[in-house]
Every structure is written in structure tokens, then in C-alpha cells.
Length: 132
Image (cartoon, rainbow, N blue to C red):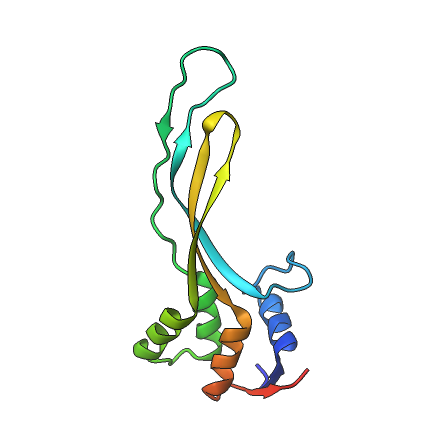
């Protein structure tokens, strides 16, 4: 880990260390988790009676990418600072995937903008910010 990193170099390092997916082009600007919170299935194209089944909600997953970034760059962060970062910078939303025949899935989504995380780490002297 270098003490001086530009934002773009930092993202490349996250991809190199398999913290971020390299399939996102060129590198992602956010990290996110998504999980099912409900929906309906069972609709069909046959003219018979429709069978509607509620889609079970999944438990909220751990935000592993965020945890891995803190583990690498600031493993000794206090619980209070971590909670304050999360409260200020984790954006929460919902999304729906609408399918055929009345079927749909509802998702909860949590997102962190990587630039906000980078700025937070720089402000707390984890490394020195280098302009692009």
C-alpha cells in the first residue's frame, strides 16, 4: 500500500486486490449491496388459474466490500468513526425488477460512493491525496 495515491490509482489498487470487480468498466465509482425484500411469483402465460406466491425476504447481507476496504486501509478505525461514516455516506434505496405475468421482485440497495470513502480516508491521514 502506497502512502500517496490518486483517486484513480486507489480504485485500480482495489481492483488489483480483488476488493472491487474488474469487470466493471473501467473501474467502478461506487460499491453496493443488494438483497431481495419481497415480491411475487407464480404468474404464467396459460389461461388457467394464476398461482401467486409471495417472494420471501432475504436477510440483509454484510457490506463486505466496505469492510475489506476499511480492513486494508484503516483496520484500527474506532467503532464510532465507522458508524458515523456509514450513517453519513451509505445511501439506501429500493428497486423493483418487473417480470412477465405480474411477477416482480423488490430489492433493497445500499451504496457508497467511492470518492466519498477516498476523501474520508485522506481526511483521516490514511494516505495523502494526489490530484489527478
